Amino acid sequence: MQLSSAFLGSKLTLRAASAPHVNPQAPRQVTCMAKKKGVRCIVTLECTEARGLGQTPSRYTTQKNRKNTTGRMELKKYNKYLKRVTVHKEIK
Image 1 (tube, rainbow, N blue to C red):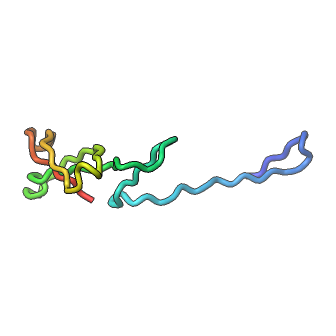
Image 2: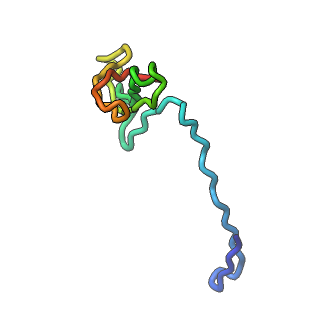
Image 3: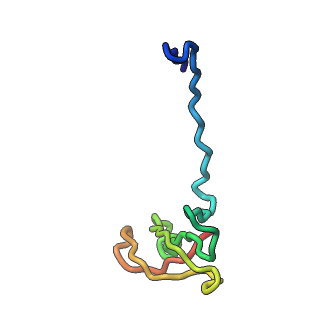
């Protein structure tokens, strides 16, 4: 798009910046403003029971401390598709 300005006496050309392509299956990276990378990272928890039944799994995101919790995280969370509390495990 070109714009002309009486003040500048010339034409200006504007280009729209393209957004980077984000893969939904890629693991999330921690980006904190005004903080250096710490030991906390964002993880995704997915229902194991719904996945085994072939139904829609519920997903939650949370933070975990990599120093204290080195293994995969497991929490009991509510699955709205199965309408009950189920075990959710950390996925990559």
